[in-house]
Length: 101
Image (cartoon, rainbow, N blue to C red):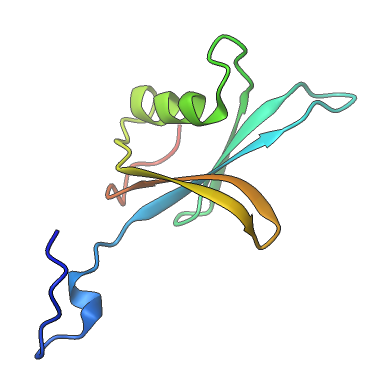
């Protein structure tokens, strides 16, 4: 990616537009088991998955769900610690249109 500022264009023109998925772990309750939440921050959709003990990682579980079940390729992962009292991860992609299944 070229991070050069051009005098005739504002900086926004060279920044890529990415779509983020918030990944968060939800502990078991009296009626539900442990879950992984995938929230599409662009289209405001949410998907809950039962926690997979075989995978053992919420980030791996979400990554493979998005890739294998939705066809969404992930570009980057960001650790989201304490932003607006949220803990978890962000997965980003340049795919703007594919929906969560």
